[in-house]
Amino acid sequence: MVFRRVVVWQNKEILKRFPKYRGIIDGTQVARYLIAKTIECAYNSNDSVEDLEKLLKEKSLEFNELLEKDIEEIKNRKVSSNSYIHLAETLANKYLESCIFCERQCEVNRIDGKKGFCLISKDSYISSAFLHMGEEPVLIPSGTIFFQGCNFGCVFCQNYDISQAWKGKKNIEDIAQKVNTRELAVVAEKLVDRGAININYVGGDPIPNVHTIVGSLNFQQSNICQLWNSNFYLTNKSLSLIIDFIDFWLPDFKYGNNECGKKYSGIDNYFDFVARNHKRIHDEGSGEICIRHLVMPNHIECCSKPILDYVAKELPKAVMNIMGQFRPQFKAFNYEEINRRPTSEEMREVKMYAQKLGIIFEPVS
Image 1 (cartoon, rainbow, N blue to C red):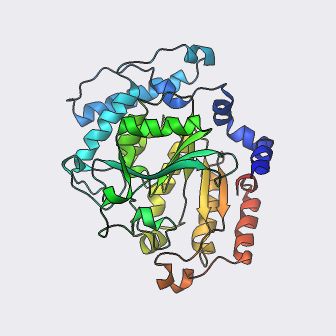
Image 2 (cartoon, rainbow, N blue to C red):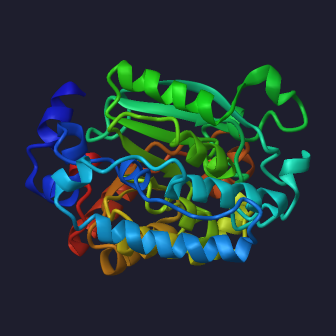
């Protein structure tokens, strides 16, 4: 793995597609969240959601104009006491009163302790945090923070112990560590001290914890890549809270249609929402993206190929990790068509199709 980590950065296409991320690692670029900290925001916490959303859009424009400045000018800017990040955190907590972080849009008041599908209230819980050496070569050593809970109900989930198997069976406080914004920042900084080259928010899924993650950025100080590792079923509004702060995106792209998403993950309009979000981070965000696609048995035509078609057409800057790690875990044995590993022939067909479309996948797969 150390050899692959060295070799991958000798690949010209990887360097071309991830220049800012590599620059943060080398200290020649500034992490986006540190830039956002320098943007002053004048607002009142009692302002309406509509007024805060309007200001968020204005500050996003200001942020993107800042990105065009000379790097030395950016480095010399001072941190604001009421910054763009404070604004995003304030708005995130407003959304918690009728939660719309993910496209389930449960609209429960999590501030009052009510819980939607993810069964997470206003508090965030992490099951583990460590240096992950098993991620894509460009990411290791990755400072992974695994959050308890998930907004999906995947029948084949390989992290089912932290995503859903505990629901209705165990008290979350007995199996995970509750963290506030300051405590999450401490966890992140300790990972930096141990040698992490990114802070990798994963789970379960990080989506139910947008408010805590954004708030933690107020207390983080290191020039470190912020990485979003998610099923990517966010709403437009919650994606707007983080789109300017994340340096590197590691989203899943599971299904090439809505029907498979409903059958195997229990969610509606999967492809419509996830494809939209991929397009936004490609066009409006950092654009430095590694898409994970887990090849499922008997799902080449309905899922793998439509996803590859979309990536080739709409996300040309992205690279892909075409993954063969699917195995029938959790409840997958109830579905005969996916109750096995993908064959070598299926994996070869997907990779050959990706090659035909010109998608870069080999360095990170």
